[in-house]
Each structure stands twice: as structure tokens, then as C-alpha cells.
Length: 416
Image (cartoon, rainbow, N blue to C red; front, side, top):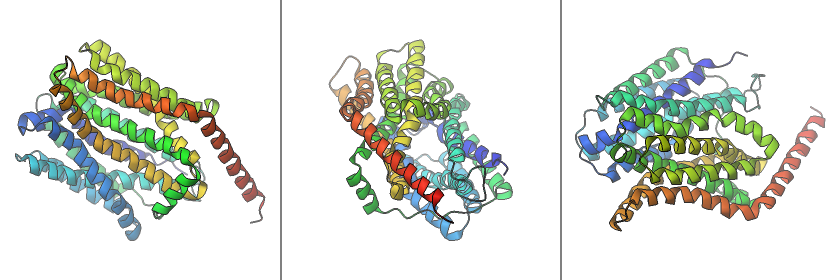
């Protein structure tokens, strides 16, 4: 079976516009539309709200129509049009409403591209990928890489902050055309219905599922801080232009992408939970230190080390959720796990801006330092809370792995 190079390329390309516009948020919201820090936070949060609300609809509609490629194309063109519309608006409320629609449109694009990868991996005729997790792992890596490479492309907005929106729209049109003319739907697998009672049953049987869920929420919550309050800090206090800002923010995303596969391999030797705890501690420590200096060399080092920590724990936290889930409820648990991360990313920008305002009202000498320490401390606190349960979680993982091996052996020995 041939490798789906086009599909992986489209996943990568579709993420570029998402992060390409992040470095110019200050220029658009505060300078052009005269908004406040809270509106900067809403720029990210309201897009995530659109994605969060419309994600189920994308899967349901695609399954009902038995089609991925045409929906991907249609919503690529729609998303591109919304990017262009955003450059023409002078009303902040209208701008944020269109941004909400853009987030809803984009989840159709990226959600159905990932669903296409899952179709290939769940198709029994695909001997190369069937049931191995290889294709989804590669798709996830290039999804992260697209976000990471998009950040430095914010340099396009150095002379004209609207340019990243135009380029982003062009990329989406390209993805839409490639999907329309070259992408092939294959073995569409209907998504399993999400049932809340299955999720509650999972938590009743294995309460330790709360650990990866909490980590995922806090991880994405802190990313919300990075793209909002920290974004403004780098522009207004440190004085970085959009291109350099994108490079600095990309320091967190690049290690997450490049360390995804190595960390999954390393987890086979060290176990999953140690990597989650060590990576989270490193990430939280250096995230906390980012508000302590205006020196770009130190900031570069702190962000790079924070990114390495994030890369160590990113995939293991997902593996921890998947391994702690009962086999019958894996789909439900992982859907909820993803939703928990989206909720954290949606709330992070709003809470970070509100906290910064509170710290500033206290007339502290460096309110942003206290803000960065607060968000970094959340990661470290999670590590400390989980340490007393370390042996119990490891024991439960061993029990579940043994149970899965016994089921696999029973299936192999049963007559066809």
C-alpha cells in the first residue's frame, strides 16, 4: 500500500494559517481595532469555542454523507473567505464573531483530514497501517509541525499585519483544491457515538484517569497563556517584532513535534507516567522563569527548555489516557480527553489576561513575573499531587496491560 503523502502534506499545510496570525494579534486587535488585552484573549478563545461546538457536527455530517474530500474542500474555501473578510472589518464585535465562524470552519478541515487518516488506519485492506497507530502518529506529528512552522511565518506581518491573513487564505485555497482534485476517500469509518454514561463508567472503574485529563487541561491552559498574555509581553515589553515573536513561541512547539516519536519509544523503557511527571516539571519550571527577564538570550533558553519538557510529556500524557481506558470505552475516553484539552486552551487566554489585570492592580513591581510563575506552578503542582499515587497508577497500568495481552492471545487462539 502506498503512503498517503498528500494527506499528510495537507494536514501540515492546514495548520500553517492557524498559528501564522498569532504574532500579529496585537497589531490587529490593539493597534488597528483599538481593542484591549481581553479582546486579544478572545481572539484565541472564541475561535476555540467555534471549533469545540462544531467538531461533533463535522464528524456526524461527514459520516452521514459518506464523504470527506468534498466537505474538506468546501470548508477550506469558506475558511479562506472568512480570513479575507477579517481583513476588511473595522468593528471589533463583528471581527470576533467572524473569528468564531472561522474556528468552526477550520475544525471541519482539520478534523476531517485527521478522520481520513483514521479511515486508512482502520481499513483492514491497508496491511501497512491497519491497527498499528503509525499513520495517526505521523499525522499528529505533522499537525504539530504545521503549528510550529506557522509561528515564524508571522514575519510576513512585519510590514503589513494583514499579510498573514492573505497568505493563510491562499494556503487554505490550495489545500481545498488539492483535496477536491487529488484526495481520495477510502474506507470511511463511521465515528462511534459519544456516550456520557460510558465516560462516567470509565472514571468509576479507573479513577486514575483523572490524572491525564487534569494534565491535558493544564497543559493546554498554559498554552492559552503563551498565545495571549505572553504574546503581548514579548511584543510590548521585550519589543520583539512579529517574526522574532513567532520564532520564540515556536520554540515550545518545535520540540513537542520532534520529540513526539522519540518520547513514545522511550516510554517503553521508562514507563509512561515518569515521562509525564518529568516533562511537566521541566515545562512548568522554565515557563515560570519566562517572566523574570527581558533578556532575549535568557528568554530563548527558557522557552527552548520549556519546549523540551513539553515534548517529553506531550505524547506520554495521551498514551497514559489511552492505556488507562478500558478497551470498550477507549474511543469515548479519548474524545473526552481531547475535549478537555480544548476547554483548557479556550479558558487559558481569558484567565491569564484577567489574572494579569489583578496583579497589576496590586501595583507589584513586575506583575508579569507573578503571572508566569502562577501558570508554571500549575504544572509543578500537578506533578506534586500525582507523586503519592505513582505506584498505584503504575500497578493499574500493569494490570490493564496484562488484561489486554490475555484478550489478544484469546483472540489469536480462537477459531475463525
